[in-house]
Length: 183
Image (tube, rainbow, N blue to C red; front, top):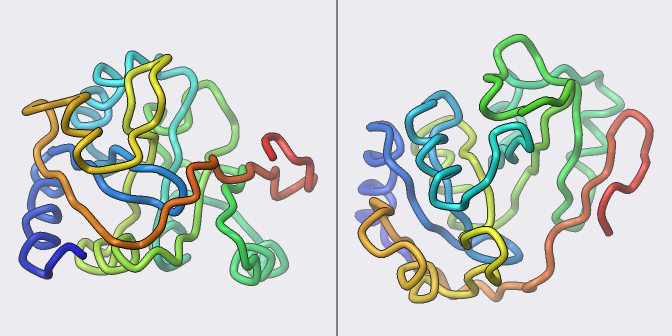
């Protein structure tokens, strides 16, 4: 488990346009501040991913995501009450940067119950970008070591955690239509 000291170092990196590697519910991810175009572009370069595809915002509290989304009370409850880790496509607000939403009218969000993510987002009081820690075409990292092998010194902070990973990507559901985009 990453210590409070390590989480504070990661928070400092995020607040200074840095990129971190961290465990999610499924695989290790790369993250940064969603308002840092510089850091997001670094992640896109590391992954060899086009900005048009968009990225996920992940947070421990729905309030941390609220500046970037437009939802009603019923949709809010649907997100909060979901028991499994789910990525939702939600109508984006005007504050959602284009480097997050890509060419889409919606933004992908996930409310996480992962202890490390909830603690980190609480420290910085904002969501973080979440995308799998792997170059395009490579298998997602299942450990901090594998993430480090992929990216070496190009990532500012590597966090670790003992929480088991599923190895499976989260489902993606359109909140408005309930259509499943990815199982």
